[in-house]
Image (tube, rainbow, N blue to C red; front, top):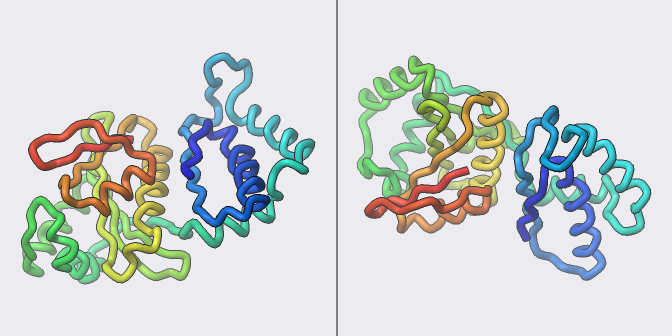
Length: 231
């Protein structure tokens, strides 16, 4: 189940669904996908900003606690089902691991340039990326401290294009959806002038398309064999 709500309502929505799921013994997965809204903004039809509404929501959770899961239960569920990730800016020291991910045949088969690259070509590419203030390359780091992939955002006016590569051994474990979702929210928060995130995926790359959709992206259009999704 994908829960989509306003950021100030998402907590109560999640805890309510989790309580029902526990009562029914449902073992499916709950994915939270709140609609982004700055805390200082006043939603349409309201006279309070999002932060104040969240404060009211916390009161409702307390008074209706017999109908919602506890905060402790919610935390336990999220720790088990949501990969804990962080992003760190890539540096020249990451050249080798980035090249390993880039030249994995199971990865580059889905690239638009579906060929391996040499170490010299890769180092020149990395230097160019790191020197460009409009391109933001991050290493995705798991809670264990292990580097598991990379995610990049290329700015173009008020839009940014997202691309991601995960290490082969970490695919299929929810890290892809987690990295896309976390990375997208992180970037939009830190670069407020960016209003839209774009992803371009080969139309036969079903796993990536599913990951972007699960992270809240929507299909916008198709150009030849390239599917364009937006957030």
